[in-house]
Length: 148
Image (tube, rainbow, N blue to C red; front, side, top):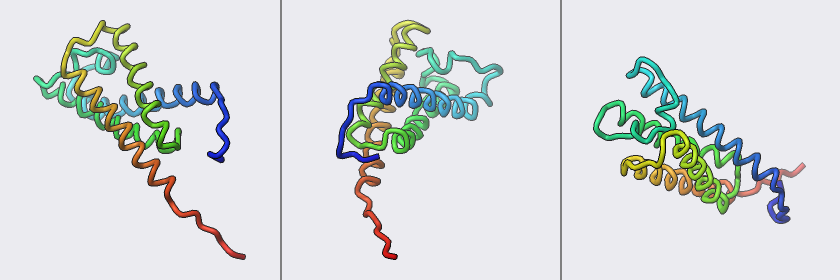
């Protein structure tokens, strides 16, 4: 894709947001299954969307916190391959976490836990900053020209 000509394509943006959201929840589910699934008898959407499960008072809560933070690291890699532009990383990361906030509000009400807010704001910062760093490194690579 050539970056010099900017074309407004809302369908591309919406599809990128949808893909990013789906892949983020897929990686979150994998990490929740690995870290939390071994500790509980039954996995459910509670661990995805209920703010009460994000707690620092239990070992299971710490596993949920670790799952969210590792998923934000994986989200930075997703940004690298799906979005490909450093200046768009913050926008797409913020959109992902705002959509997650709305889903959490619909699922379990307004998140009143300070731990939930700290984990999600930290995840947003990690995802956006690491995604920008990775995209900048890719954008600054030398272009190799081969001679015949």
